[in-house]
Structures are given as C-alpha cells and as structure tokens.
Length: 205
Image 1 (cartoon, rainbow, N blue to C red):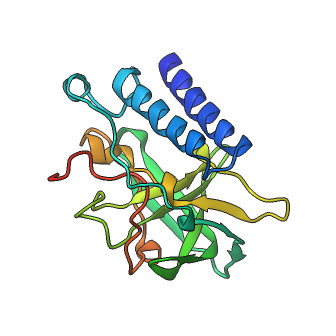
Image 2: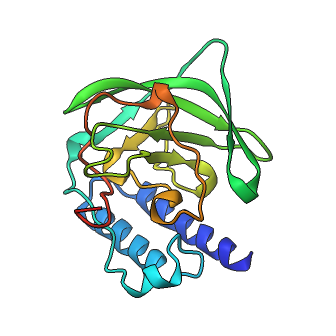
C-alpha cells in the first residue's frame, strides 16, 4: 500500500506541475512523457509486470498538436444514469453521468459525458473512444480526466474544464490483462479520430 501511495503521489505531483504551466509548453509535455516512462519502467506499482519492464523502451505518443487543447463548460443533464462495472478484486465500480461537454477538435465535433465516481470521496472521470482505437490506440479507448488518480489538467476560474487530448492515456488494462478497467460507455464514443496523446506501445500491436 505504501508503494501505491507513492505512485499516486508522483502522478499527482506530475499533474500539479502541468497545471502550474501551460499544457502546450514543449518542456511541460516532455516532462510528462519522461516522468511516465520512469513510473512505468521503474516503479513497483507500474501497470507493467516484471517481464514487460525488462524490455520496456518507453511509451509512444503522437506529436503534440495545440489544436487538440480545449476548454469546455460542463452542462448538467437531467435524469443522470448510473453505470456499474465489475473491476475484479476491487469489486463494483459505479459512475454517474452528471454533465456533458461539447468537444470541437480539428478532426470533428462531438459530445462526451462527464461522470462522477460513486463511493467515498468521489471523483470526476471522462473516458472516451474514437476512430483511432484498434489501429493506433487501444481498442478499449483512453482516459482524459480521472481526478481520483490525480489525472487532472485543471479548471478555469469560471468552472470550465481544461481538456488537452495530447495528454490522453491508456487505462491499465491495455498493458496487462491482470487489470480490469472501466471503459467509455456508448455516449462517449467519438465518430472521428483523435490522433493525439498516447499510442499503442508497438506499431503492430
């Protein structure tokens, strides 16, 4: 548990540094990538197992594109739906959609649900799928916001969310089947590609 606490602290510190700088700073983005490589390759709580670590050469990313950084205002929805996901040894994971955001990106426009993770403390969560899944990115989709894990790029003074899809990352279940992850429900499937953020670890996987 102490190593998990350390891992989460390091992730939280990483995103705190990002919030203190602009996400589109080349230095900030490079620091994000190098810190994640260190966590994956060296930390005992890495999503990778020992065999994967022995051959790990770093995560792969699309080139940074500032046009995929957006600031969006959550719009509350009526009759929020609660989703329950079995996450193995961690039990049942419940998330309730409480809002939605409109996304306008160079490759298309769409809407993403914003979810509140039920349980002690709670947290805000935005998973998504797009048309790059299965070819350039994980078929199950990626995450762009998960405040429980500290993956939070911040909010503006008027409550808008900063979503920079260059920082989109894969859930742990992509790297190793020992993990069970909540994935994007149908309303968070974008009908266009989002060619930014984390890619498949190898070009042919």
